[in-house]
Image 1 (cartoon, rainbow, N blue to C red):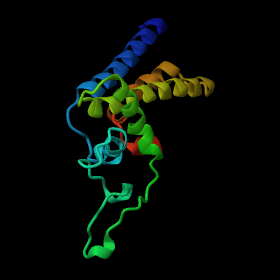
Image 2: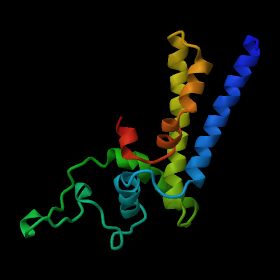
Image 3: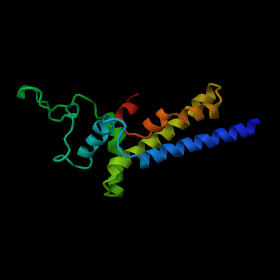
Image 4: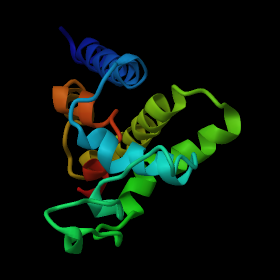
Amino acid sequence: MDGQGRRRLQRAGIVAGVAWALVVAVCAHGYVHPDEFFQSVEVGARDVLEKRGGAATAWEWGGEVAMGDESWRRFVPCRSISFAALAAHLPLAIGRRVTESRRLALVGPRLWTWLASACHDLALRRVWFRCGVDVDAAHLAYRTSWTTWVFHARPLSNVYET
């Protein structure tokens, strides 16, 4: 295969990888890890969708936890909300203005994460280019990895923290 044919094949693979991540973001049911919900969407639903009475949050976000006697009850958060806000608050706030769909709480933050990963891809391509790396080959390897498909389409606040 000549160089141009190889490049076309690599770009087709990149497009397929980006499209597959979008399919994972929209169509995948369930969560790959409980923190995908508990560290972003749950807190966003409480704050943005005003589900205070029905959305119990973990102790790290200022929720109530009983550990032994009453002296262990905590109501003060011990984690910054900033990364959870990036992962879920902003897309839920935008989505709330567009629709009242219940699916928004699941799909909205995932689409937001997918969009952020696409911006991340563009930045990586610039870095690879400046470093003299074969941009299409590097992007193909990156975009077709399981880790990228899953974690760049899921609103885990840890993804934003790293």
